[in-house]
Length: 374
Image 1 (tube, rainbow, N blue to C red):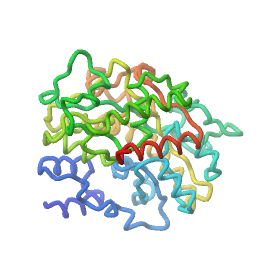
Image 2 (cartoon, one colour):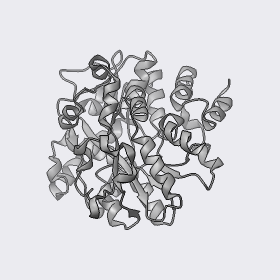
Image 3 (cartoon, rainbow, N blue to C red):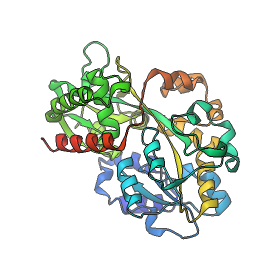
Image 4 (tube, one colour):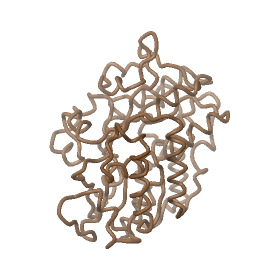
């Protein structure tokens, strides 16, 4: 089966993105060479919900319950970052369900573009960890919530153990190591990179909005810029570069290390001495959702144990449904960087905090300038 045949199989739900990506890695092909428009959104149907999400979440494995109930997968639309997504929706793009992360959620609520979620309409909501529901700014009137927590994980350094020599403890300094200039990669979104820069700069997240903190972070990001080979939010590009040895280390999410390890690539997902970046993402319903009942079906499917088992096993991400962790033994979870006690993992990292729109705009504009070399 050639690449175009495989892409067709992904669209039809006959081949998972994971197995498709494995084939590309084996062939030395980067997924970035395939047009992002070639996703299922091209074959959208009006009677199915539309899910606006990050790349990699537009796959059949996450929607078994939805497909069983509705006969088809939902439609998918893809964004590269939460600011991009919110800007598009402010411009009039209407979807049913979208997928922000906790630091963006209060600003999404303030936009007036979303309706609260009724937990009684989500059968799996009772099994969601309450600590994830009780995020700052998530409570709405009448016992409703703005965001149904779905997935969580960490941003850290994935590095080739045969190519990168760690000096002392694993640290964020690894992505500032001049020995590997031109062989380091980074996620392009400030929603990850800027916060990781804050950890590197020793900035407390409670103080991240101060002018002093802003300048400290900008300084370390400018220091890093000449060392970075590529900034990208296409995680497959980073994975393929690590697999080929083009890169020795890159800023990634858990899933990249899990995928590469499953392919026998000698990589490790670092546990920096300063702490990894921890994120929690979830699901929000557009105020004008054209398929409201099926929007709730999307949420229920994503919060199911079936989906949670896939997210943990194949992506190495934590899932909000506590029963998902019962599907694994402790040794397997430890190997994935997780635990039977998921709260211990959540508490070990630096959890992002919501910021104002002015701060987000300033941060994104500054980071774009830094990436451009200014």
